[in-house]
Length: 135
Image (cartoon, rainbow, N blue to C red; front, side, top):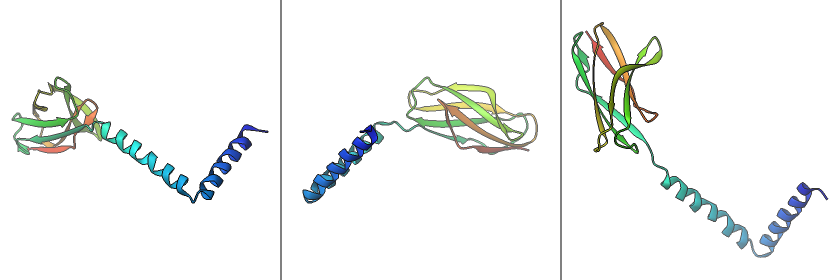
């Protein structure tokens, strides 16, 4: 007898026992899987990374301060600033670290005019992009 046929016979037998017992066995077995999944989901830490800038429009050479707040990320973790250039995200030289209150601050300035789309990356978690206009 092949092992797959044997397994089907065992499953069919178990289902028959459940049906003969009024279906109570099947009804009890199904809910036990859901609480286990729910417990696993609550044990996972969700990482967040949000940013704000002090100015959305600046003159060339003026400094922009980027303030960020994270959750699920340890203090001291490195923060990098990225700018979208020609459709691709490029890491800039400005870096910072997450402080004990789960915030960080970066400063950046641009010499060329244009719309600068920026974001931060902390422990692999990217913030939503923010646009700064250099006029």
